[in-house]
Length: 119
Image (tube, rainbow, N blue to C red; front, top):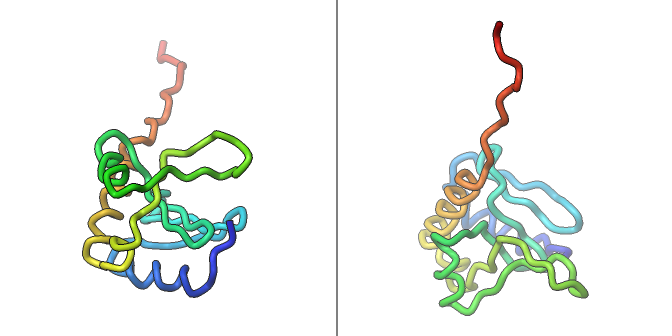
């Protein structure tokens, strides 16, 4: 899952206009955040964004597949590879990234309320 320094820098430059953008090394790859929202992964020099039913079709139509963290297992995650032509076009990439952030926010579960009640 290693990510080359050049690819990491290129993606970060392409996404520089995304508010609160930060990256964090993790498990040999890189996690992408907008503020505290985890929305993307860099792994093996491939960029992945968070998907759900609202945006997955765009990725599938482009021939992209899901992030598969283990080559020897069938498990996938709800992050799809961003087509290289999108990665190379900063304005389009920013649009796809913002959609990934929206999906990540929508997928967050609300904090559970305390079961204690006032008497």
